[in-house]
Length: 125
Image (tube, rainbow, N blue to C red; front, top):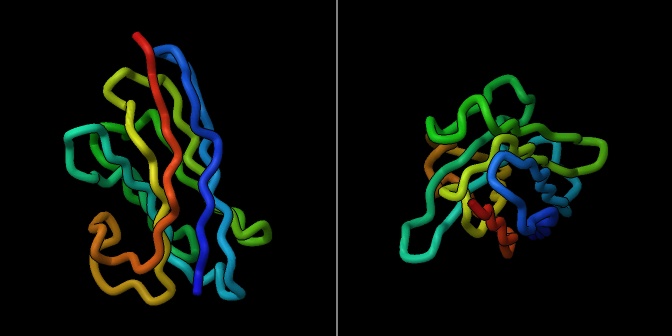
């Protein structure tokens, strides 16, 4: 069983920055594919960013490309999402996701078996 715990959300003004963290349990963290997704009120969950186990391949949604950066620290079993130049439309609950044996395209939520509880990000205008 893998447990994921997000932190780092909060309220920030437009143009500001936040760094989300997701700490994972599990002895095989370095083999996990990891992703960040978000869900705004009344909207479906959408892909934000994903990273392969080796960090050899990284994916971003077009809406965050150039502003957000996903990274991982296998020694700390943690994945990060650095969010810069935040916009009001980035307001959402952000979830991290993990899978030990991903099969499929990492931006797809169906790839991931494990999900965190989410952390709220609110960007004021």
